[in-house]
Image (cartoon, rainbow, N blue to C red):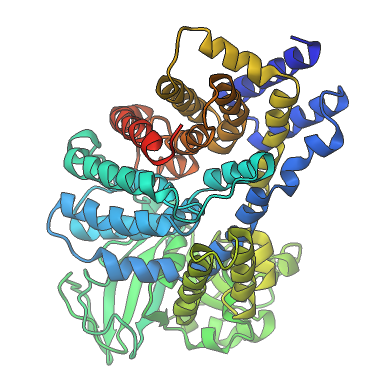
Length: 588
């Protein structure tokens, strides 16, 4: 080997070791590797930066905007409420969850699907009396398996497809992967339903201890034309929220304090909840509820520009010792008070009659500009916005789903490439009002794109310097290998990589090695590329290998060993099926 190949392998080993054993973010590590390869002359600028112009990377960036449009309109919550229903058993609940999760993950970013399903599944599990730990890990696994069914289901598929286009001129169809992806989803889903109840832990749900957080009272009203009228408290998902609980109902001036789960909701009911500040954000995501405080509708702020904000009153706040009604707070600050907390406890009584005291914490609905405008003003000691608290605009959910359906149809029919269809869909989300331009910009996950794009530099260096051929020669030198055994070896090596580093980086690093193996064996490369696709996505054994696994780690109160217990057999099952099916669909 020449020094460039040795340097590339040393850089690769450094990247793998740093990602596996430190907490340095992946984008910094891989950009540092790119810089090293560029500065030492292993790669020229064009090869080093080629990932930033790769069609797969640009498609991922565009699909982030499409997913954000679905999120802002509450389309996923809308579908979840429609499909989850009220199963009688834990296995029935897992089945009702796995099917829509898998289908949705085939057509939108699976990270976004899991992010939007987590609160819905937590509330659903509490209504059904099932520990959330029995459902959240299957949610992540179903999203991973569903993402393998289509080309746009996971960023890994798009990255490998982008490399196939740029290196070999091969374009995969939108549903071409379904020949293997759908059987994997069915078999993996059946495994989770039939054995999940035995292998998954029973740890209940992670509920906030209300005496350890700021406690608020939040009042909402049942919309007269909404979907909650005629439903029971339990059916509406209001019996046991993650961050609060229903204490009483005001029905036409009559107070109902004993709130049974089977009590039916009526139009105009005012519901009073007590809980953490996130309770207000949680209630905003339930279609059919609106703030009971009429002042909220008088805010001169569009729905998509609103968020929930906490402020602490300082000694120079102008309305100290005045009631909320007399303070003209909304007029002065263009924000509406939803609740008041004092010394960590909610302040009882009618909201308008509460008198301001220094140190009171107010929960407000305001514009996104409120935080910047008042962060350094002396009225408030502290101003902080609650994450992800913009209320969804459910009226636009059908519009967003229609845009997604048209994108899929145009891509599947061959009228447009996936990149072109994604560009049109993201533009339609903005033009139709499902998403604002500023929210679209913020929805693009730049660190993820940097990781993927900078990984291409390492992949190119492996090919250009001959390091990939050296590694593949070492693999083939282990003994006489048939194409099938070589495919299995590539799959296993990719699956090991994806458990310790990011799935996209694993795919980009294994692509040139898989290409070199196929060339040395003199067989078709496509089955090896497909194996890299599926293996890079099949991360079930650790919470670190795939982002959705990490997302459910806290809410499910899981331990590392839980992933090994259920993920190891699932990984073996999925790997066996994939290695068996891939050569049957794409011949060597």
